[in-house]
Image (cartoon, rainbow, N blue to C red; front, side, top):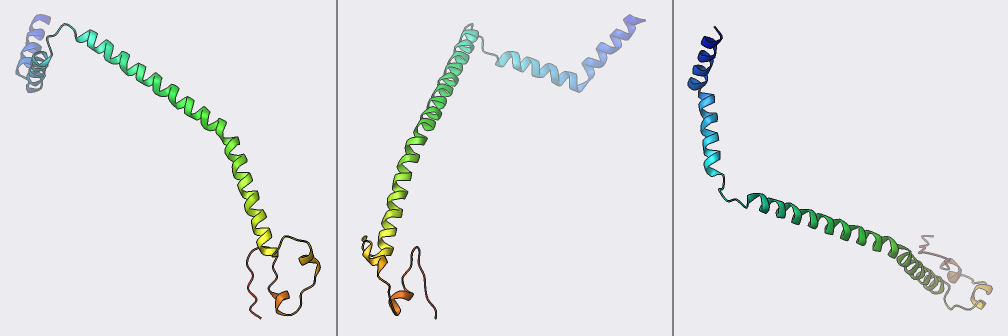
Length: 125
C-alpha cells in the first residue's frame, strides 16, 4: 500500500507544473554556475578585501572624530576672543571716543536724546 501511495505521489510531482518549473530552474542554475575551480579562493579574497576596507574606514572615522573633539576647545577659545574683540569695538563705537571724559559730561537737548549705551535706538517723540 505504501508502494502504491509513493508512486502516485511521484507521478503527481512529475505532472505538477510547479514541480516542473522548479526542476527547470535547477537545471538552468546548474548550467549558469561557473565551472572555474578558483571560485572559493576568489570569494575569500573578496571578503578579505571588503573586511579590510571596513576596518580602514572605521579607523579613519574614529580618527577624524577624535581630531574634531580635540579641536573644539581651540575653536571655542578663538571664537571667544573674536566675540570679545567685537564687543569691545561696539562699546567704543557707541560711546564715541574711548576716554572717560565723554561719559562724565552731561549732554543737553538733541544730543541727550540720541545717546545710547548699546544697540540702536530711534526716538519717535
